[in-house]
Length: 60
Image (cartoon, rainbow, N blue to C red; front, side, top):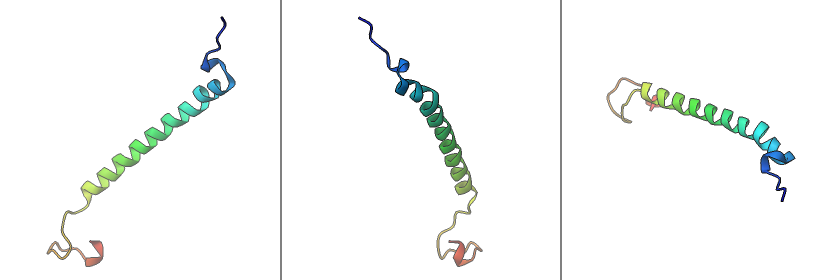
């Protein structure tokens, strides 16, 4: 019995040659953006609203 594997079909080929590489690129991009957001949040001064930290009220 000659069963055709998914990767041998047109849809399977599209999935492995286009969809998967794009998915990996987007996951890397998401990871970079999350890392940037974490970095930015760590750089932000940690002061509470109304506290005496020297920042303007608009900064809170």
